[in-house]
Length: 275
Image (cartoon, rainbow, N blue to C red):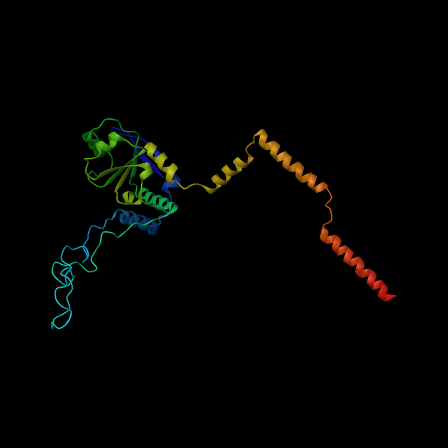
């Protein structure tokens, strides 16, 4: 899959191929939904909070006698049944909405979301961005690019880019994020994604799907790598000891001796009985 690459002035310079390990995965909508819900739940805060009868300020005196009044039973003035009393079973701010998701599932959800956006043709790249802080210049650059100015745009940098972050603060509907902090919610919630060229390589190294064959070949190369002379000496000593143990005849065990004595005694008794 190819995308257009633009310069810092907004002119198209070339086109490049997106890495298949990051932008050509199957769209798993259930996994993407789960990742977005997890992010929203982890950001949620329980603001509503009421006081119970034990937290309300007021007297603990029993209002009147329990019996012989002809009225309902009354406790203290802090009872939830009375005006100004505590709340029974009301909302509390101790609720925990945090959800967890394994790393492999989060990375798979991000790959699915990036692939879905790339399939729409909503991804493009910029070669570099200068170190000058100017909101006006950044807004002018975005207007020159083939995107709709004012719609939600995600700008991805390879690492912390202070001038880019400061320039993008006051541009409407523009959000900057590092490649290491890419997430499914920002990707799916944006209409366009603008990568710096180095950010694509950084994101692929972190979130790209690794090939199992490459992993096995690396392990094989490690196993076949030449060892140090000390390691060779240790291996040679172990092999010599194993061969020496094979050559030495094993001594008969005590149990076998006892068994042989018993068998000889039984044979003698059988001979005497036959005679």
